Length: 125
Image (cartoon, rainbow, N blue to C red; front, side, top):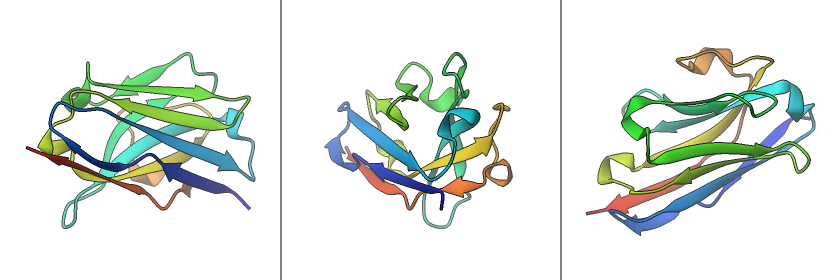
């Protein structure tokens, strides 16, 4: 069955960097738009970034533009989120998700069919 597994979360001080990775298995990963979401307890899940099936199109939410970069390696069935200049407000649980075919923006939770368990990112001031 389809599985997504995130890794790379952790604790970092403000201004630091983390690289999240997502490993996909059990489905045709290269045909899917891949997205990254984040969620803070008590708040709705927020779309952060997405990358088209081929990798030629990428999208990031305004609040992380210039700091976060999304990429993918279809040969390895992985998607990454490079997070630089981290801020305390980036603290959240980050989820990788898959949407069949093309990406749409803004990305919405309802459009994504496969989800990982998430990885925690904590940024201290």
